[in-house]
Image (cartoon, rainbow over all chains, first blue to last red):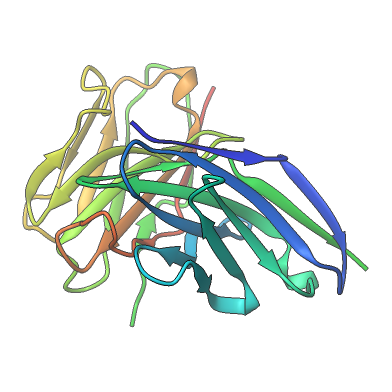
Length: 113
Length: 116
């Protein structure tokens, strides 16, 4: 079985500041990890994913995430926040033969001027 | 390329009534998923289809929920009768391939259901 914990249901940053959204996972087999963004009244959109290979993954809109096996983490970062980044962010994990993703509860990113 | 389409976008019903949601995946996508997203939580998979066959419906409450994908293209999800706890956003997603654990899922905008 796998699980995902997103620390902080809300994260507030100033425009231009560093964005850091935390995700820790639990999996008994090597995981595949995903970050999705959900804008109000819209479906989820994939930001980036880690399957194998390079542990630093670059995604769309300037986001990136690093898979750290020793810390069981996959934190999402962006050097400089934009007002348009305000949204809900979900971390998800699948593992091995399980194609059913487990999602975290989500983190709401608030960007203020 | 058109995305995943869902209708209606919003639905308000009273408990014990029936409701149906429709989803049209991206053209050519073989695998289709229905998720339930309760307010403040992440999406939870209800059912997965590959073409017109059910791959996994282990988390579908079959006493009241049903889903079909008759021609391997669009799909309907039905709740009959609805309960208050069914209030949620119902998301449809699709993947091009067979739904491997590394596949990218493309999500529709969802249907927000409110049960009074």
